[in-house]
Image (cartoon, rainbow, N blue to C red):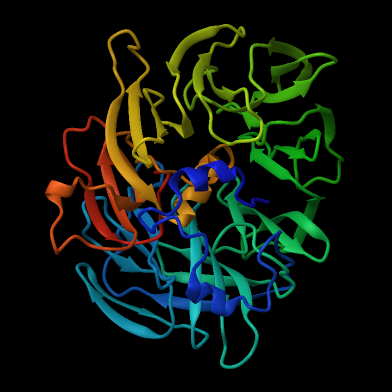
Length: 475
């Protein structure tokens, strides 16, 4: 799916602090037989393994509806081991790895590994917070690398493995998969690069049902998003936008139109409206329509040569980032568009790489680029009172390579991986902090770290561990 685009970003930041390295040397040893550039995965069988967690689970079950409240962060360290942790840095649990026993603040964990060495990447929370899907690359003895997906039940510790021996390339740095749960927390979609090409798959992870894997689309570039109604799916493949009413049915998708210079089409939170860019004879428009009435449209025409957009988590407002140079992935304008296609407010006008709605839709955070100081700045603004709110600079940093990938394709990754806390008060980010010279000392840690940021900027960024990428649970 996603080779890093926009060499201007890497040139801008150039590796000044060493944190934007686009390859992991340990992972490279595993993947020497595998072409780096490309796509993903052909699944052939499912086996089981077990993680045993002595002691109490860290989640809390709600007595009224049986749902779970987690408020946990999943992250990967530089050795390719996945952990979950509380936002204050306590309660760390190791979720993956070879055979080991480790003590932590909440007890002992034993994981039963299946290989001499393994590297895990891109932990992906299910919407209900009960499962993690992770990509794994194993090196059993002197054999070739084995690539698969682990589905981990974070409550019981039990895991199952989806094997896929036909991977021919990576879809993102350090990962042979792009993983994205459906809203039902049962169906898992993923992109895989196989001999067929870049392929979009869907699998039912419920062990009591048929786990056959369905191929939806083959081709590139390919971006997509789930709707909240009946396993509906929007796909942008090449120059075509398609709508699946239900991916598990045999009905073909509906073609909605032709479009270029954008990536990910979007469903509104309730699944009733869709957004995508459509090419007209002499123009391009952001089309807002009802998913069950695709021809009942509202068009917004004032957009740049390249754009990205996403619906508010709480309303029919949509955030639109755009810029006039389609040869770079850096945007220079972020606006909120109302349901009738008018501009509600301008959030920012400056070079930035990515933006994210908070879960409560009160805030929008974005990652701006300071070319003079060659650094990234994480900012946030309260958009409910735009005339009173000024952006707050939360963090100046250099992102890890994996975080750079997520930022470069934020309009896709924001649907599958959350950097916001469920209560919209904090953000999680991995990278290295840009520390002023006068604050540096011999004890300043090196390498990428996991930081928690407070949205109002009242607290300094809190380092909670060493890691290359981290994401918050959705609940």
